Length: 124
Image 1 (cartoon, one colour):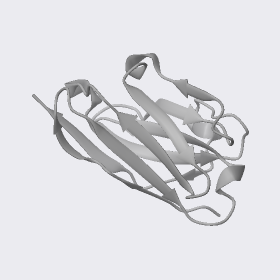
Image 2 (cartoon, rainbow, N blue to C red):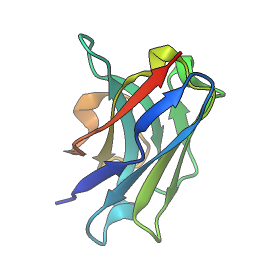
Image 3 (tube, rainbow, N blue to C red):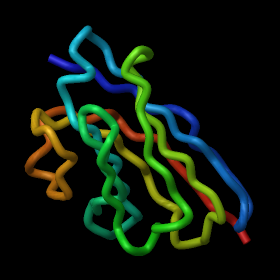
């Protein structure tokens, strides 16, 4: 069992930056690939970024490439999502998730544990 707690969301102006953190309980954090998803009002939850167990492999949705960076610190049991050059369309609730796979999958169904989410609001 893994419990995930996101933090770092908030209100930011367009063009600004935020760093989301996802703290995981337990001593097996490095056994899970990690992913970030987001859900805007009235829309489906969508894949944003994923990172492999070791951190050596990452994947991103095209809309955030070059602006967001996923990383992890296995010693701290924490995953991060650095978000730069934020746009209005990045407004959503952001969720972190843990997958028992080695590489970070893009499909929601491949994730086993989810956090409660953190709100990111980008204003003009």
